[in-house]
Every structure is written in structure tokens, then in C-alpha cells.
Length: 224
Image (cartoon, rainbow, N blue to C red; front, side):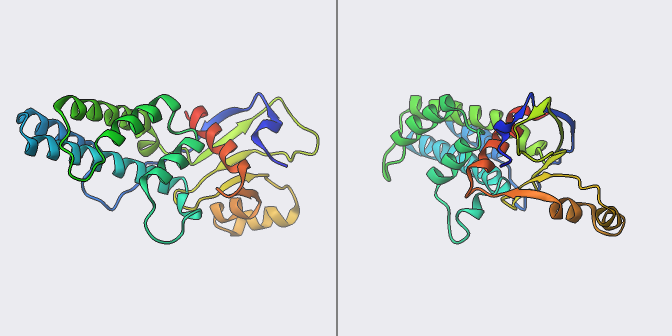
């Protein structure tokens, strides 16, 4: 078993991050700026509704981008994925803290009614909460923790030696690279694509396995 708990004093030695690419021209921060501008227009229902709508677009796009990158579609391969499922996935991955989650759910629930006109204070609170969420997660978009060379002081008996942890955006897999030292693997290393070689000689976990979340939590919090 290669659970993260089996490796003592685990350290991220070198980093191989990359920015996440998006096919959408507009960014969550632009939607958030629109929300602020709408709120500055006044207290009329139209301004308040437009403001809350743009803040929700910012929230949904950010949560969609990150949860897709970490592999939520491995759990839900078909159709639309609801916002609550995305947020719960991000919570399981350690990406959304309980404090932010409570604020997010509390404010969002108050403005979710179909024909409800939120108050100026509710809109202001919601914008603040979305801004907090985006600030807490932007680094994962600009610098996705895709590859970490690791060290540890010792490992539990029966746990394999691991030298790298890799996650490729959108795959929904954590690769624990074991770096085999056989003649065959050395020959493969010279002829194969490097990342295909990593994939072949790795222990693999998906979001359907609890070990996945342990390693993702570690990657997110040890991210350098």
C-alpha cells in the first residue's frame, strides 16, 4: 500500500509546475470585476441581480477549471457536474478549506432562489467570499502542482520506494513513480516518451480510491 501516511517526513524537493490552459477567453477574475462594477452602479434590482450573476459566473468557472484539472470527470464522466459536487470534490482534495466552504455555502444558499432579489449587503458578502475563494485557488491555476520529486526519512514496512509524484491535468490519476533500475527499464527510458515511461513505471490511484485524496492533499499543501 502506497498511502501518503506511510512516508515519514515527506518533503517536496524540486518542482515541475505548469499553468493550466483554458479554452475560455474570459477569466473568473474578469467576471468578478464585472460584479464589482455592477454593484457600484447602484442599489436597483437590475444592478444587484447582474452583480450576483457575474460573481456566480466567477465562482463556477474557477471551481470548474480546478476540479476538472484534478480529475473530477473520472468520477462523473458524462453530462453536467453540479456545483455542490465540484465543491465537495475540491474539499476532499484539500483545495477548499472548511472556513471558506462555510462562507461559500451560507451566502450562496441565501441568493439561490430563482426570482429572489438579493440585498446590497448580500451581494457585497457574496463578492467578498468569491474573491476569497479565487485568491485561495489562483496559484493552482497559474502554477498547477503537476510534478514533485520527493524525499522522506523512512517508509512503512511493505511500502514501495517512490521518487516522484505526478498528476497530469484532467486525467484524474496520481502517479507514484518508482524509478525501476532494471536493464529493460533503462532501455525503455532511452526510447520512450519520458512521461509515458513515468506512467508505465508508477503506482496509479484515481478519485475512486482514498489514496488519491491523501496524495492530492499533500501536493496541494506542500506546493512550492
